[in-house]
Length: 297
Image 1 (spheres, rainbow, N blue to C red):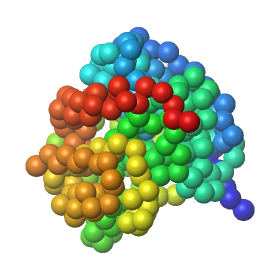
Image 2: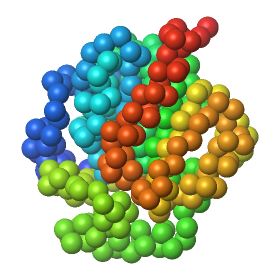
Image 3: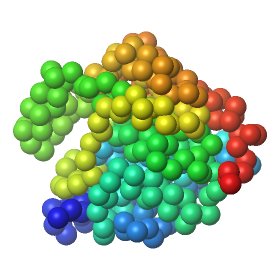
Image 4: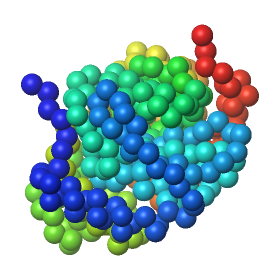
């Protein structure tokens, strides 16, 4: 029987929510928040910005939530509204009540959230595990997407090296100690400064039992089925993917794709050079605004 994600107990959830409240001060802009009903449970959404640009919707990585975009929200929301979702089935303020049993369910979930927000057309951006979820929307139901951007997608285009997987397992076995977590973060995303509120959220997130699975390597035929304009961003020194091999697969298979590799940057490229990555995303989005202003029949 399919299972749903949940915190280990009520105390773990209360601790997590308290950490989120404590981190609200990181968000630099006026913000609106709401919970949107979907077939899989309520989804917590926060949004900021104003303007006529097609909205951007953000999907975060593992261990974080919509607050994780605080470092780049001012850049992304200069001429449009930007929505940050707490992914269903992960630690966050969303509450999963039904399982996602198929990969296509991620597309159902995102589109239900967009419908609940009244959004007919969006640029979808996912980071790390969120890039995997964004790709599933692009693959299975891209009707509302003007474009999709995948930042540091691990395990989608190439398999992570065995040495990386083994090290992740070892870190996982090391428990919830601060020292173990900081060591893992420094290894996975060198050069990225994690604020104390963010660290507290990541630690509290370990008490969540996630049941939505992980990325897998997409087949060539699946990549060819992604026809929405696609931007894929890599750190040249990323541990989770081989940017050169991944770029080759993308160029050869996704019909309307661009890639951007930042040499010397790691998996945390979005945190290392947020303004540069945001500018690249906005430039890409701008080229796909005029011709994508209406939902296709």
